[in-house]
Figure 1 (cartoon, protein in one colour):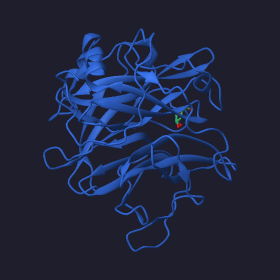
Figure 2: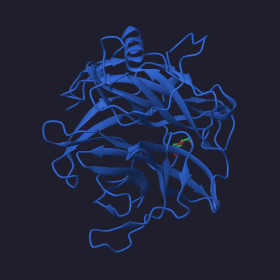
Figure 3: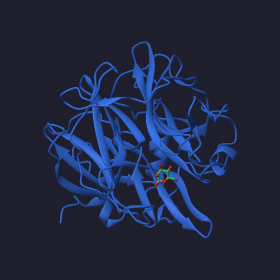
Length: 340
Ligand code: BMA
């Protein structure tokens, strides 16, 4: 491994394949057995995609967007020994309120899963008189207690940082409007207690690159590294045949993450394989989580493919960050603190 390192813990049984021959562009390569979750994975669930996983116990656990056969998305729990083959609970996650009473969202999609201190947080998109963000916490993956909704509608693509910064919880999100929003920048907000959110700052706009020229949204929980926070996000362009969702990479300042230090002008991954180009919504690669190992610098990236499947891709922290730095092109909106 080079001099750029992940700051964090090690994962003994990383899902992993070495880089194959012929990777000419960004140093990120797909798992040869993709997709790792196929169609109709569960009774009553037609598709699982845009899902998030994390190490847990002696294996892995995840929260999965399950598109039910009635068309309504919900979140399902899955467990795995190798982070590739997953067993799902048949029943969707049953959320409760602070009193322990049932408190189910009307629908829930694109969950992220982030551990901060000793608590796991699930962050997803749901109806709050319009699309907005829902949050729940759990410590045992048995009781899932919803917290106050952090933001007013409309908002999507929220993800927590895996540690507090300056004593505050920190969350990225993408304020927007209803429907298939044709715009959107990434913002950051702070909270002392996961209930009251403020000190909102602009992180980055759509920038100058065509592949992400329409809207962007965060992605996987940022990875702490010696160069800054490594964020995999999605960038969308509008073509005459619809939106195309690619995966981009930026490095955010460690202590002031509303400042972008490096922004890769090239996408890191874009729909190319059949399971990314063909499906319920064609041409979508949508990153929602990583598993990463501080000891070796290995990163496994989980992404939704064509709103139909889950894909897995691999990279090394030093190789991907060197590529992002080498191909970085920043705009003034990236480098400013984002306060007006
Ligand atoms: C976005 C979200 C994602 C989805 C993408 C492509 O607006 O709804 O869940 O993957 O569109 O359909």
